[in-house]
Image 1 (tube, rainbow, N blue to C red):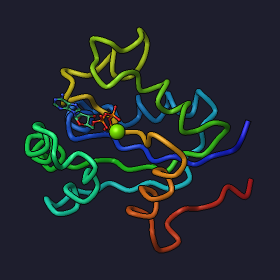
Image 2 (cartoon, protein in one colour; image 1 turned 120 degrees about the horizontal axis):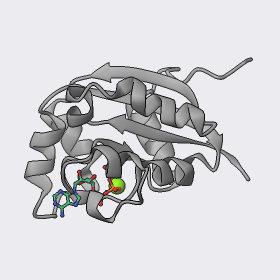
Image 3 (cartoon, rainbow, N blue to C red; image 1 turned 90 degrees about the vertical axis):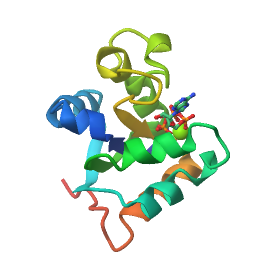
Image 4 (cartoon, rainbow, N blue to C red; image 1 turned 90 degrees about the horizontal axis):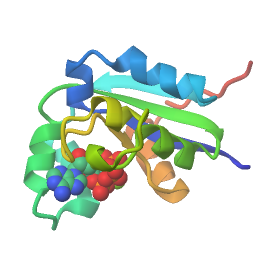
Length: 143
Ligand code: ATP
Ligand code: MG
């Protein structure tokens, strides 16, 4: 197993539901370590750039409205197979398809308002971590 880093976002609905600690606990209990964290309110331009891969999708405008509707909590997580592990813990995009006990099965309201984001591959994780934590924002675990 390779040690990886991945990007996690607790989306505006997750913040509204006061789930920061609940969600971070799931990551920590699964052996993932937080190596960077910040709370912020995305601008429209930031959200459009972050989700640019979806810009031709019919749900893009709604996705941008949703992601800018309130603050988000952004983290870089580190651990064995962190990219896949994070996505297992999140569950499927549509909560009705998400495995029981996953974040989305337990907390997501819909395929859009689905509480969390997680990088989908190591390559995208590197780009996404740099997007939010460019200037030495990732803090190595020295103990
Ligand atoms: P994320 O990228 O946020 O981790 P994901 O990788 O599970 O989620 P994507 O296909 O990348 O899913 O979609 C990005 C986000 O766009 C979803 O998390 C959801 O908020 C929204 N979304 C995806 N599909 C739909 C849809 N059919 N209708 C409305 N919103 C959608
Ligand atoms: Mg995605």
